[in-house]
Image (cartoon, one colour):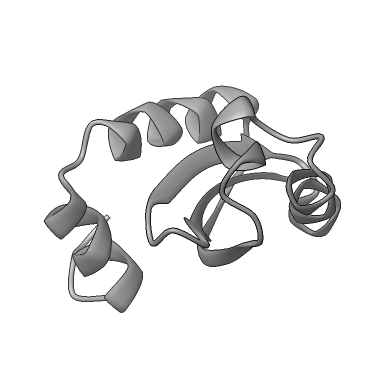
Length: 83
């Protein structure tokens, strides 16, 4: 399976990404070996996770989330926004 995730960083910002192994990817981010953006904003936690059958779907959703406003991301995380 492929996953799109949203991380909440220690500074309160949000980061979206995709992976095939959410637990391992979270460990990678928190060890400083994840995305450059998160390295200076540790620790991070997964606050939203979506599952997809293909890599392409997960990557497309990641890009969609990255273009959302903070308010839209918060609504998605809180479950008040539809996919």
